[in-house]
Length: 247
Image: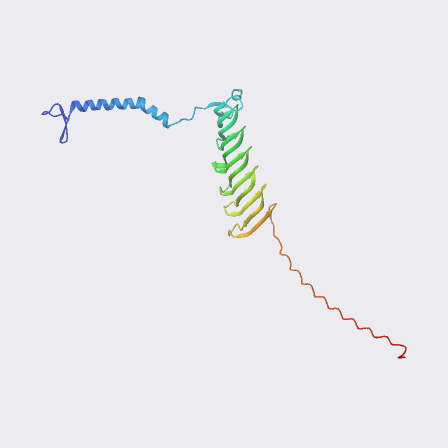
């Protein structure tokens, strides 16, 4: 890039670049990049990226975890992960993830006293979602959606109480065809609801249910009209009595 006519310049195609200012610019740019990497970039990362705290790790039920409170990882005896999440005095409390012995995710969501509680997702085989929604004491509770373990189709969408449909919801077969929508009580149809044909989707019955059975009221038979009463025959007038004179 140098040339004999202008030793203080670099020749670039049809242009000439003065060496000293250009070298000064390069030195300044290199210093600025170094300063940015050393000071500004870590500060930006600290503000934009909040890393999870490095969890403490325990083998499940070891004495050291008995009074531990904070984020932790619990291990099976063979070293595989059993639980990752919040602990309070050694018990799962808050948000966490529960894993099986083969490393499969079983549950992700809220915990209270080592039980599923609050909002969470329960998984079946191959990480298929089995249930998502509310929990209380390890049971489905509140609003939730239950899926078929084999086909992954939605089986129930509505409210639960103590693990069974209770309140209002929609029930589907294992192919996702609607069977019923309406009221439930302790897992049975109750109150107003609609029953559908699972093949055609047409309404089979719409009305009231009790204990899982449709209440079908038979129409009342019309009352037979009363036969009119026959008029009473008039009494024959009494014949006058014959007097002695006439005799």
